[in-house]
Length: 254
Image (cartoon, rainbow, N blue to C red):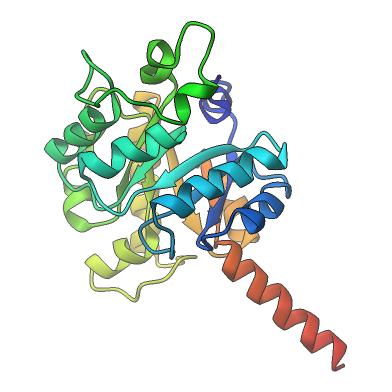
């Protein structure tokens, strides 16, 4: 089936991405009905494991929302990249990609031969493949998205972006700030980091690659779309639930 995020990027549109930390199909199903263009299962810093990732994918599909299922894997290694793709991920966001070799490795893990070394066995994804077969279209439809979140990655950014098979990048603001000796946070206002954002937008735009960013608030996410980002995430479902709950209690108590 066509990757709706990829289609939106080709049309020059930005997508609003949900983020799942809770390992539960029901919450994933309900959350996916809220209008997200894509929903990402967080296996790095969420409390998700592989089985809960599959359950969340089932919840996303059951919602009927059409949200594109993606995953942030815990690390850049072939075992987990292959398994989340076999489970039905349409995009893989991978943390701490700092060199062109690490970016090339990620592409290899995510692509079938001859473009990569992914092993064949799409246990769940294959059931939802196109008429021509999942394997015939997977390399074109799967999004490979390294995270850019360190000083080393910024220093290597042009070489990373020149790696064939990279569809987008995803900025982790907290780790990026941390690596430059600044306070880790999401909605950054530091001019130094904002200048880095501008550089990344310029370099990705030159190559037709999308830039994504994790945000703390919808207001900041909207501002980043206007700045040029093509994928914005707003906190995660836990953060949004807690914020809404605190506000509800506050209003109830007057």
